[in-house]
Amino acid sequence: MFELKRISKEAIPAALDKAERYRLLSEPAEAESICLDVLHVDPGNQRALVILLLALTDRFGKGYSVGLTRAQDMLPRLQGEYERLYYAGVIAERRAKAQLQQGALGFVAGDWLREAMDFYEQASKLRPPGNDDAILRWNTCARIIDQNRLPEAGPEERQEMGLE
Image (cartoon, helix red, strand yellow):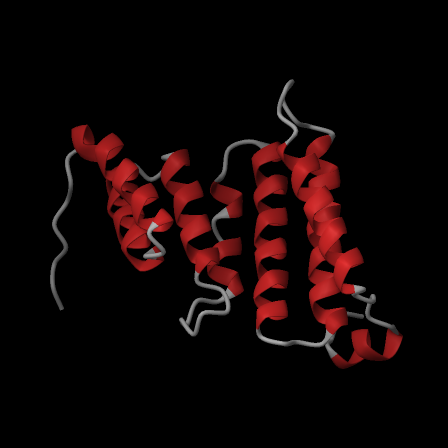
């Protein structure tokens, strides 16, 4: 195994700009690697944590072996309650979209979207003035559910999936 090299603290802003570009280029593994390098030097760097969380969720449903748990593990490291709730919603929403792309049963994606909406609803109550991101995402989820007529899981499906 290789011993990884440390980046300098002065290089963090440029490294995070690069990580965001990699995400936009649909190269989430590269963005993840950069964020891990930044977090090795600055473990509480909020920007790196958010980019890492988003890079992990970029990989949902794309054949990568990235589990939901890895993204959720980032949430307690975010500093504000609004951020934790908002990004919990993002994780659930992206999981739902991946399920839809993979052709999962409608109630599975629908339940993930409803969970996202619950997080966005809670986040919207704590949002900073002028920040309606949680409302915009809630509306997106609602439209996806309505346009795709996604049902809620019934008691049988919930029991089968271990949700009750």
